[in-house]
Length: 239
Length: 193
Image (tube, rainbow over all chains, first blue to last red; front, side, top):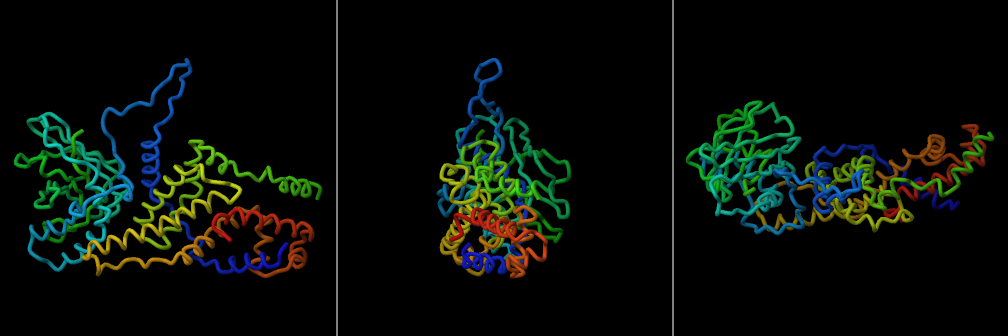
């Protein structure tokens, strides 16, 4: 055996630090997203059933969570970037806290753009259609260990329904918002209570306009405006 | 002693050294992706965490496995293990990440004052990756071989000294080290040398 090779291995081994031994487990959503992305690009092959017939993969009747496309595949015009702090400036007087939030959101801007790019809006809508928001946390600055799907039935008394696949954080209040994509306005539907899954859609809001559903962590600090700490967000779009 | 010699011979048979996961992955077996993720997900994620925050690390880990699966036909087990192959993809994705962040910084000048993690050099990334892969490869050695190689690496003991300290015959010490280095080369292949 070459003495030199053994010495090279020794040098590398002796340079191992404690940090090199640390392993972190990726959050569970990583595997979920990988699976979803693979399933989308490679539909399951048709498999013969026991009686020899071909069985096709079941087609979901209702839309489920869609995966945010890979950033590099998505071309999003810069003006689509959501910067909640901009809306906040219009809605609220300046506060010392704003600067910090502004930076957090600006830092996430490239990622948020992808979420906006998820869906295009069709204004030719008949009154009974359902709007579906796919809400994913993977690009937002605060952690929520799951995903959620929202739907809105456009009938006489529209209800926004959201199903969560994991518990919301409980240490700080979580607030539900409806936001215009151009951020010119937003409306709070209030603090989400444990077990809440449906909300009356405000009569005076057009779902075509307030199409972004957003959940944010709102500390009890007396400031009624959006904190900028979104944990879930999605855009209502035609089913 | 006879048993030991028999097992040594078997370990010398290269056909017994093929990792079933590596061949299943290359063949596109649909369970192999999950197995690969279970085995290497935390390695990939932990390599990312050395350079980026946990949210970016999660995104990159996801991209790595999706890219790896789509490009699985390019994986060649004779050039190294799945771990180093995935680590090579990880390194490239981490570099891409910093490039896109810096593009975004230029576009959105608002974030100028936001502290961003420093971009690691390609060499620094490679060194971290190699050391982390070596940790994995050493952990995966059979116990006796791992003890022997650890004495050679970390205590600078010679073969004779290891044999004397452990009571393992000198020939066995030598073959343990030789075989261990073969495995380390595989465990760091694609990236090492």
